[in-house]
Length: 390
Ligand code: AVJ
Image 1 (cartoon, rainbow, N blue to C red):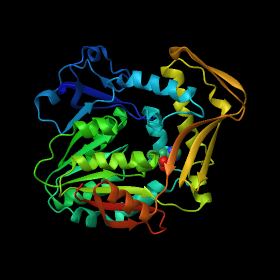
Image 2 (image 1 turned 90 degrees about the vertical axis):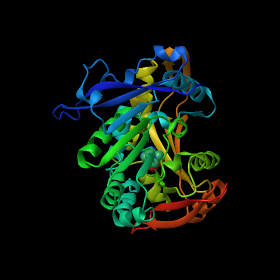
Image 3 (image 1 turned 90 degrees about the horizontal axis):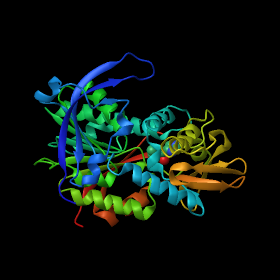
Image 4 (image 1 turned 45 degrees about the horizontal axis):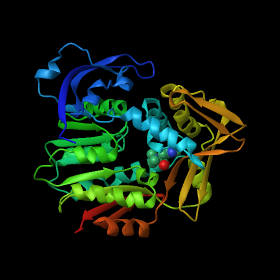
């Protein structure tokens, strides 16, 4: 495919969050087009409620902006979703993909998960970053660029942004997330907090974003892959992904990888099956998304959440279980599926690591594990990897 041309559009954002007053902030929104004529028909429908693409010219168009959002997630997004849902629901055993959990509501539900008592990883990682941010920033004294893959709300990242901006004049933050609305919301909040921050955001899946990143400039960059997002990858896929990160890095660049640690079954299963049911809502939301976007009729009450730790595989397996025999129509796919009572749809794995696993993963992908920090309860790890020869 030919190089993509970025089109920068003026835009006003009107966000209504949880009934709060409407705020408006002009910024640059770059809808990246490719030269494929089919793509010009593409309308960024999921953004309609948040972005007004027909907004009158705003001052953001003429004044230099501190925020650019490249929206690559829209391209072919619908076709890919349809194909993945068809393939997953017709295979045996049935499955769905975790990346589709993160629509606008799904991203918010994940943030809610981070607040429940049982889900400890976010708090544990935040404790590490809070305690060691200065030290981490000190590992790259001349770096002025932070790249975050799967940034979400970027709340924990504030610890590092603060340490970096304390130690230097200006910082470029390059967040990548599958959810354009999560990006827009977090970017606005960050720009409001840090006057010497610039943001160049990518709404994209990880590989798309790695291929589209701008030139890094002369100074080292720090790539963040936090929250144990690595846990969603099957081990070969985790290696492929770290290798893909490694290939965009230069010898002086650094990777900080957050990984949840192997631990007792009870703690792990509770973390993925909270008593309030927030995790269930988060997972069932993928069925709601299929109902909405593919004109399906999943009965959301007819599914239970099953999260169990497979110790031999070192992963928490998260599935939905059909609570009765039922058939579901997915009209946009012209597909009917018959689910038996007790039949499961696998939605995600959350792999857990130990320090040997992490060292090995680095060695196999062109990284050397230089330092690991743990939270005080030793549940979670933040790992600093230096680039080595491939
Ligand atoms: C966002 C992939 C890190 O696996 O812990 C949380 C997703 N799923 N509860 C995780 C998730 C159910 C989360 N990651």
